[in-house]
Image (cartoon, rainbow, N blue to C red; front, side):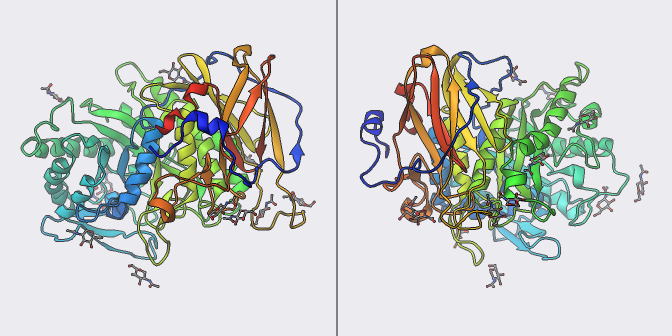
Length: 552
Ligand SMILES: *[C@@H]1O[C@H](CO)[C@@H](O)[C@H](O)[C@H]1NC(C)=O
Ligand SMILES: *[C@@H]1O[C@H](CO)[C@@H](O)[C@H](O)[C@H]1NC(C)=O
Ligand SMILES: *[C@@H]1O[C@H](CO)[C@@H](O)[C@H](O)[C@H]1NC(C)=O
Ligand SMILES: *[C@@H]1O[C@H](CO)[C@@H](O)[C@H](O)[C@H]1NC(C)=O
Ligand SMILES: *[C@@H]1O[C@H](CO)[C@@H](O)[C@H](O)[C@H]1NC(C)=O
Ligand SMILES: *[C@@H]1O[C@H](CO)[C@@H](O)[C@H](O)[C@H]1NC(C)=O
Ligand SMILES: *[C@@H]1O[C@H](CO)[C@@H](O)[C@H](O)[C@H]1NC(C)=O
Ligand SMILES: *[C@@H]1O[C@H](CO)[C@@H](O)[C@H](O)[C@H]1NC(C)=O
Ligand SMILES: *[C@@H]1O[C@H](CO)[C@@H](O)[C@H](O)[C@H]1NC(C)=O
Ligand SMILES: *[C@@H]1O[C@H](CO)[C@@H](O)[C@H](O)[C@H]1NC(C)=O
Ligand SMILES: *[C@@H]1O[C@H](CO)[C@@H](O)[C@H](O)[C@H]1NC(C)=O
Ligand SMILES: *[C@@H]1O[C@H](CO)[C@@H](O)[C@H](O)[C@H]1NC(C)=O
């Protein structure tokens, strides 16, 4: 238990000489933000393990290690999140490489991959895996997984390998490690993939459904002998259809109409989303990522899908949780200078909370070795050094804001603000206002390039005034998500804690040069004023007894 008690936080806090983040110019604003004492009509309820990850199939051995060399750094980072949100992040092992990986039971290595830079410099597109691959599922205690089976490769060897792999996958995931299965990643791109189509152009939704049913049944049959417990109808469940989007070459709604859930073995509806692409012209940190409107517009496609599914006739309407099974900032593994910055961490907080508000009830942030948008790099490579990256701190802030979902499920609402470069959310627990968060996404550069300003342009502090229920009157605790600027890629803290690899292998370490333990006063009239430096976020805790409780 590395964290101090609440009383010491509120009493001692700012270490001598620590810089206050609030020393700068103050931007004034007129209107106050109204917050009701009970959750308004439109709220979202996150599922347990709302903060979840998707790990690229070919990178999973790097992230998890093996039994002789488990990756304890990754495990520490996962535990930090679990301590805050009540459940260690669920891990989906999949992505493009799931459909390239062909199982060969005679292979004596976990994974052999061939990178074809013309197809992707970031991951192998020809992959063989052996039984040792599955050892990586045994390294992180208390973690649940979604294992991605290959649907894409349709050669005889690949199909035989799929069935041969079942006993290794189910044995590794027995004893509580299995959450669900997945069969195929983004099959709506199988006909059009830039890395080579794997289905003919006349392949339809019905063809997909027929294949999915055929192979999911074959997998179940193959599981009956080695893992009878996992092959029962109660246990045998899927994340599906894991489409890349809502308007690619297959329509997700039509797959349900065509009988995707004939066997009633789908547990969770998954969809994937990227805000934009790494090399798409015109993509900027401020305009594309640090932009609440951009998140709304992007997630609207998925909300539409979810509404259309709910409107299907009763016998087809799935009535299942709807989640992001794979997502991150910019597809093609992110762009340096954007996806790896503190600005992207702030983007991630807004993206995740907009999902939570709208009942996209779990979000698997996609990870891969050397990926620019990664929350952490699990091993040293000649491209990227092992370490905690800025986006991880966004994951931490989301977990801290939602709190322990298992014991105190929050209702999450968005508080509309006038500017698209900022957002705010409220969390209610047991009908009571418990936490607020303000995410200021107005770009402030740490290094230089603060266009139109001199080099010593001080960081503006935006003032947010809330009109709260009167019973909120009293002292509230603040936790800040902070770095020197939106372009910072190091020096990020949450509540003055660093989770950097170099410090304690990803365990929380209190930084004495960052302010901690601030409080603010809610007036007798329910007014609260909080300053938020541009390009930072603050969580406001109302239940003083629980301030910091998530740290236990
Ligand atoms: C989210 O789901 C909850 C519980 O299922 C429901 O009460 C609420 O109205 C839903 N909210 C939205 C925005 O759909
Ligand atoms: C486990 O991983 C380490 C580090 O990657 C590697 O050196 C070792 O060969 C692996 N052990 C087995 C049994 O695969
Ligand atoms: C298998 O994939 C190839 C492309 O790699 C495609 O031409 C062929 O039609 C596919 N076969 C089936 C049965 O989908
Ligand atoms: C789809 O196209 C393939 C040739 O690529 C052809 O063999 C097959 O019959 C077509 N299927 C349908 C249903 O038209
Ligand atoms: C299991 O599910 C399948 C597919 O829906 C069904 O045909 C079968 O009868 C079920 N078995 C049991 C024991 O309920
Ligand atoms: C923010 O995103 C919206 C929706 O994509 C877009 O219309 C707007 O131009 C963006 N703002 C900036 C400053 O680029
Ligand atoms: C939502 O779905 C409707 C009906 O299919 C479609 O017309 C509309 O363009 C969709 N909107 C978005 C944002 O995808
Ligand atoms: C970097 O590492 C990869 C994989 O280990 C290797 O193939 C590549 O040649 C290395 N590149 C350089 C410049 O050393
Ligand atoms: C921050 O720096 C980038 C260049 O790296 C520049 O494009 C951007 O306009 C700067 N932002 C501000 C607010 O000055
Ligand atoms: C800098 O000034 C130019 C010209 O007035 C303006 O177009 C631009 O938006 C300004 N940039 C920032 C970041 O304020
Ligand atoms: C952040 O700013 C402080 C104060 O200017 C400086 O001492 C520190 O080195 C900066 N950190 C990073 C990571 O740039
Ligand atoms: C605090 O100290 C750490 C370690 O010396 C440094 O990396 C970081 O930039 C400092 N942060 C600030 C805001 O000065």
